[in-house]
Length: 461
Image 1: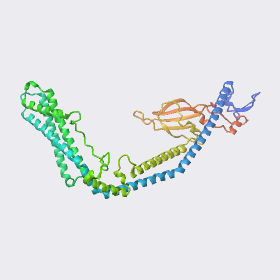
Image 2 (image 1 turned 90 degrees about the vertical axis):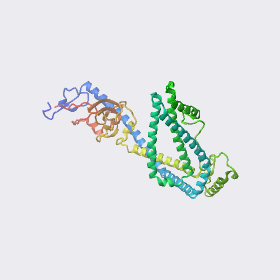
Image 3 (image 1 turned 180 degrees about the horizontal axis):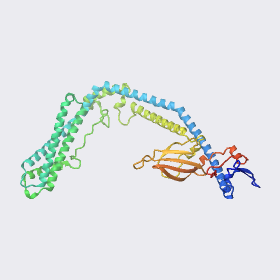
Image 4 (image 1 turned 90 degrees about the horizontal axis):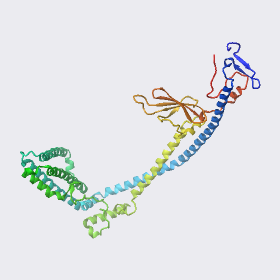
């Protein structure tokens, strides 16, 4: 037994190589044909896996070298790319400063020209506003009369619904007027300020829009009453309101809440007034004199583009802006590529880059995590964290334990703890070379143990 002597037995193994073996291994089947076949299969698997691993190492090291060369090239040109972006930004800033200086120096003249340019449009919008206010007043008078004079004994639900809707409108209007009154107290300085032509144009358009919105609301109230009221009642107040509606209806576009044929007045740009052809000086009048004087002054300092049509060369600011956009985009792409390469190069693929071959390799199973770190120093166990959170539990994580094999495949999956999974897999990436000393020891008389990954041990007591 193992308790006798040294605990080793000399096996002459006639016809083969003799060796000392532990007495604990007598009659355990280790020297049997089945065990020898198992060991031969493990040795064959390991040799093939080791051969594939060497290919992985060559691939990983060459990939890292290639990535480093790409990074060096990008870093070599990044300074010039960054400088080009900085130069284009400086050019753009200078062009904008030049334009701003010109606009400030000609502000009064341009405002005078703008006044003349928008004057006819403001007048046209003012007339539209007056018309909208008249119609709005007509509908309010009509609904006030309906509310006051309708026959309350008829109890017509359509009429009552119209009057109720009108009361809600009046209540909302009262709140708006109170809010505007409160705001007016806080904006006395704003009221005293002289508004520009553009501001007056916008104010007139906004007021017209609000008036049309009120008209549309009251129009709908009367329209629904006409469609639903009981014609047998013959209420004079109701008939009068319907008559007003019928006379107005042909002039109103119900779907767009606007007067028929009345299109929105577009405000032209300050520079050209959207003129397709350049007007002659004698056709421009006072506006033309101011316009020409400003145009000449702008041309002298390189800003004549402000007065050119849409089919001329691009302005200095536009050219500078496009150049800056292009340069800054190239700078952004360069920085992103540098960061991407640096991240790949810094990734730990093992001491000899063998695991680089497994990047982006999908071994089919439910993807629930991302690589976090190696466990230990042997580079045979990986930890994946940050997976989807379990219901009423932690984020999922996976520990991957790898053994030598000729293929990349998962052997088993278990869940030792809640939402913490254990994968066992084979991969050539961990089929390391067996040391020469270990191989020699297997053929010597020294009682040393040597084995291949996956081989069963028989150290029995």
